[in-house]
Length: 463
Image (cartoon, rainbow, N blue to C red; front, side, top):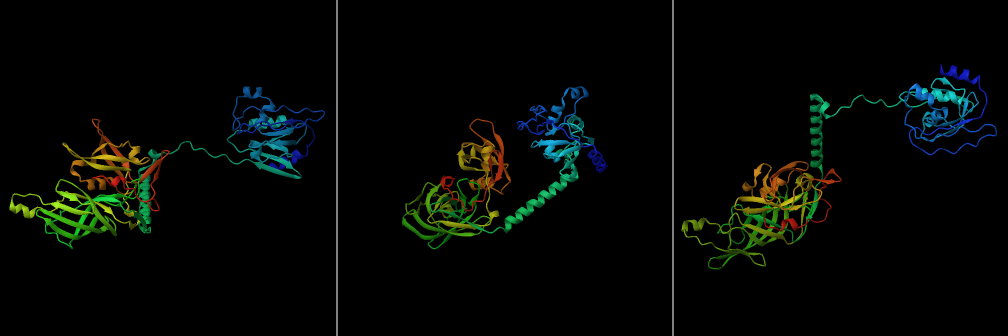
């Protein structure tokens, strides 16, 4: 059908000269350079008004008031009057004409099915076009007759589905796919090769002996303590590299009784069995003691000096340990230690650190560090806040190492705390582990490999 129309139109081809300018329909642009007028035929005025992105549907009354120039102004091409096939003088960028594929010097024969014998007919054909349909034209280009078409417009859905529109089956499928993706991610973490983190010399941490140190301790004995104050992988506190409850082994280099009622112990700690990990060699000595046993002191050389407690009952004297189970000893690394573990070993935290707070009402934990950009800060946790509950467990029933282990866990998981400051009302905060926020966007915290050595600041306080 289009070919028959083209041949008929070619039979009535005549010449002429007048111009009609157009402006790009999708962007407001400055008008193009005017075409130099010919001697007898002045150019048609250029329309520079802002135009809509698509041909609007107007009433007949409004359309009758609009000039051909204004209508062609929305088409985006300059046509010369007086020719059967209206010559295209210029096509404006980003216009409907350019989208249609028109070029300068094309001769427009048909537009949207209407024969074009003048600029007026081109304006009428363009004005009748409905913006939601495909626009087509027939042109003569050099010695060829071409059929041009705009792309089909994208079909806009009548409505969009949201999370609440999902069926029960789709919810189950989404949950199954999410679980499968998590399993694949966990498998990838498990296959990841182990990488190393160096803990610098002079890094401090605290231990205790769960059963105390017995009075029968002698030179050459190997004692085993438990880590209570863990070591974070770096100053951001995102991951732990020496977790709580890790077991520390030390050898008694010397056990002596220099005076009546006084014992001395010189212990060198040489390895650690990491919670959830492997055994690490290290070299550490005692530098301080803290607890309810006032007769314990530590010499500058790291020797434990213990005054034996006075016990009235002779039977109880034999049962009383030399160092009680609630006594904490501060250890300091004498040389760097290297921890080599796979990614799944490292427990992640919400970006906060705590210390034990003993009051008349019982034990609680005070927040000492809140790292900027982490979940703790985002949820409103502040330095000085008192944690009265961690993951549903009362702080009064938790040892420090238990509280710290409850704060840290699998990256991406949540920890819930009840925080309170002074006489303020308690606040329940749900914090996400192992993430940081930048410009409101949540991002998983990078694993601590290839980072600066961990900071000793959070770990030097007494638990």
